[in-house]
Length: 43
View: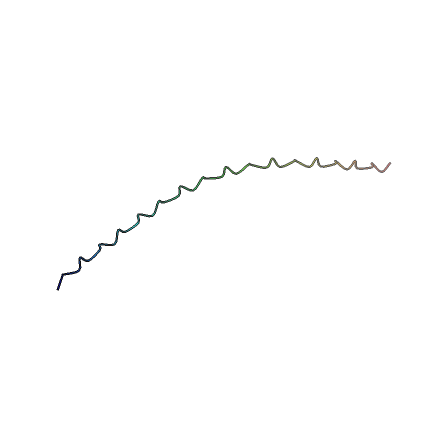
């Protein structure tokens, strides 16, 4: 009887995908102008 040769299974190497970092856009805050209340002088 002939001996059967065992086939070696090749392991596939998984390629790691590089994740691209997304740049966050900074939102500029609008400054609200405060209205000055004029005080009425009592005569």
